[in-house]
Image (cartoon, rainbow, N blue to C red):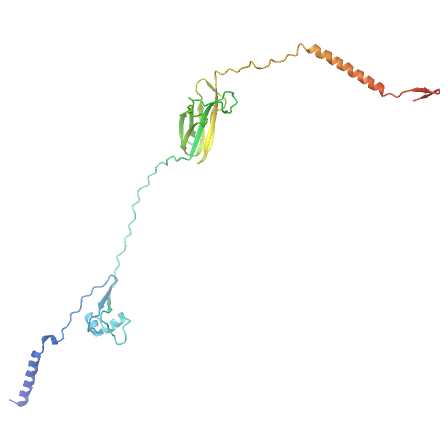
Length: 279
């Protein structure tokens, strides 16, 4: 055998044995690229590991070093990496799901009648107008048994009450219609039996919110008899007519006498002196 060939085979065999002798961990192992999940904004972030460089990071994430630099503008010229550093290695387009606006359910509007709010009060007093002057005085008491109705002219309110004898006449102001709406009302009073009105028993009243109105009605008992015993009789002049005639004649004669006396007193006196008439 040629010595050169033998020497070459010996070298190859030595290299083969040297390769078997080296520990298996000494050979660099190919690291599988990590599985990275894009975030909600579509950005894929890689965390730098020990021994990483830009070439290795680019290889593991399937991009070039230039792309890595473009995605991470803060890298220096030497592409220095620090363990734990976050690198942007990819951006995917995020398809936004359109927001569906749900309209609120609107129930059909049902009109409800507006309740009566306590805005106005009308008090009615029926009194015994004993003297018939249509004015209530302290000595003229309230009368029970009268029927009074209160009606709003547009028909929005109507009610009826009966008059009563008050427990405390000193502070009594009449029966009251409370919590009624403002408006124009007609008040009608029906007098009890055996009474006659001394004023109109119907009245139109216009009240506003917050008002409190008082209306009085006077009536008089049919049994009242006017006492005329204290009235002086009418004077009669029929018996004194001749006397007045005589007195008138005397006064007339006296006037004539006084007139004549005044006339005589005013005339100039005439005297005869030395045969010459002087005035």
